[in-house]
Image (cartoon, rainbow, N blue to C red; front, side, top):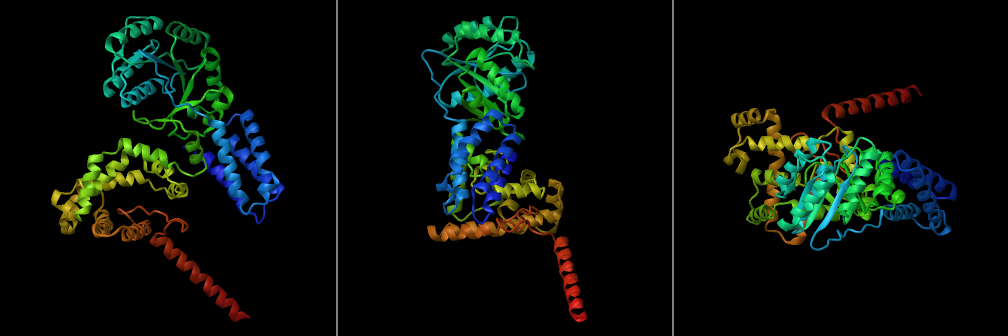
Length: 493
């Protein structure tokens, strides 16, 4: 999320940090780099001008330039201004008795229908009873898609395949909702590939006759500047109450998130961070600013872990650890739990300071998610006895497991060699006091990068990537060659 913007902003700040002493001239140079970063992220030009003007007023002050660490002060200023630019946000859904109506609108392909399902699931989690309304009569597939989404989350869907009037469909749904005891009606309206008057008039009619309590504009964050322009046009026609940004898990440059609130005055209420129906989050400007500046977002990670992880499974694993038991089955289950929170790179993005690790993993072409799948395949190919005690895996067993998982026998060996020390460490920790456990965890963390799980060459913080045997040999030959060259030059003298 926002990788390009994050890299460019941090590069600008690192440039300033490399200066011995900050002056007004090199601070202006740094601000120019910040301006360039925002423009490359497709942030609207008026937004960039206003943003840089506000930062300049604070960053070029005499107080900032005389601070012991002016660059950290600049990061603080940029962080605060990013929060102000994207916020504030009112997370209240403003529910009303007996029925609250949400109207979702947006261009075709923005993820509007999927977002209806995600919003419905969110309401179910709040112990409310929503109903989805298939009011997009332009695209038959949208009706089918909404029905499937409704079934997956256990929510009723109002459908009328014979009607050609979306306004009447919405009216009928409102009457039906009363008899079903529905709390919230979610209208999935029609979209177009572009804004036209026919579409806007249809949406106006629904708004005038249904008088929805909340109107949300769903927009694809990957469309950049076009997202801001379309949000502005829809807001002028419908008076939006909020924006839902989708596809923030893709290669988005971040321009829409930073521009839409400033241009339209409409807050971003929710963000879609994945294709799965549970990947809809409340938008928090402070957390998003932290992610953009590489500060992580631990609060969101904790919230997602609380919601998505299987508490009973975690408690059972904890009980096993307290008994001094940790098997490959436990390890496999923990990998499955972690997968519920998203990709490995996504998880690293939530943790402060892990942005650089994530970047280095990308540079070394390490697909951590593929490695985790491979490790899972190896474990799944083992018998229950082998998972409990991998020490019994001999030559024949190793080849059988490798054939079953579609890997090389050496990779099975590497996994076992990596797992056994970790298992012994965790078993020994079960009888330790808190202080000794912290020391053990620190020791376990320091082993990160020592060929875990048969092939992931993970970089350590501050040490760069680990070298392969071939690279080590080449480096040794280069050193020997340079040494001979120096000795030859010395002999000539």
